Amino acid sequence: MSNATPLGTAVVTGATGGMGAAYALGLAQRGYDLLLVARNAPALQALAQDIGGATGRKVEVAVHDLADAGEQDRLADRLAADADLALLANIAGMAKFSPFTTIEPSKVDHTIAVNIGAFTKLSRAVAPGFAERGRGAIVNFASILAFRTWPEFNVYSATKAYVLALSQAMQAELQDRGVLVQVVFPPATATPFWQEAGFSYDNLPPKAVMRAEDLVAAALVGLDRREAIVMPSLSDALLWDAYQEARMNLLKGMMSGTVAQRYAGA
Image 1 (cartoon, one colour):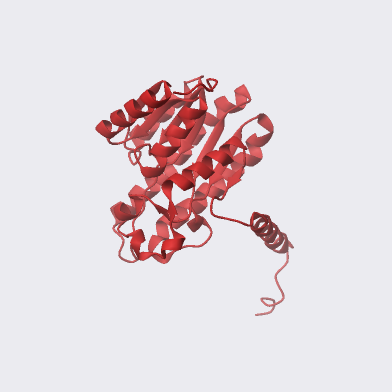
Image 2: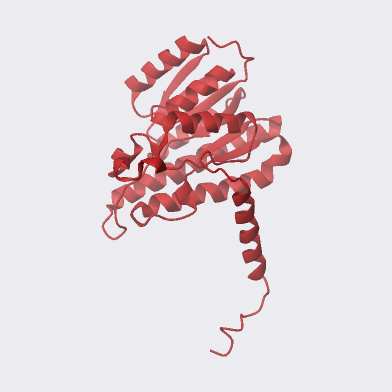
């Protein structure tokens, strides 16, 4: 049972997945009541009973297909109206492992709808209330593929780069208003995500695949520390600082307002 001080309600999308369920349990153990979001109603109800029984927290469910724009809007309206909301964890994600030239258009639409559409709408729904109240957290699960596209995870990689970009924009706007916007970058993790995408993580080097429980435990430590960027598998945190510095130097180099010499007079 949880003896933690009540912290308000946390919303977890993709709650029935490997990472989502473990993350939801960790939040409840820290004192959050929960609103669990996923498509599978029986699985959601079972998870809610398990977490509620284990922690004593209030756990509600919301059955939504986040690939559907109408479902996104209905959930967004509910979240925007909830003054007790304290945290949104955007964990739901979709992917299709396929060359871009042969990927089914429906899979492209589905991936963009969940990874970009739902993520954006739900974040936009809670951000004004968090800013007004001067507290709250938006936790966005991206991927290490935000930094380097895997050709067969083309659309997925692009959507996770979007998650990083929008998260950084929200950080710049909200960090001085008491709101934590955090990005978690999972490496390859042993969850059903891979099989659903059409690729088995068994094809990857074993040392490259992290256990879901280890990933979530590290992510929750990052939440406890209120870190803006959480990279559970990165040992040298200075590499992130160097990456950010290199990006800024590149940007400064492109802001001269003049044509580079190698293009002049061509």
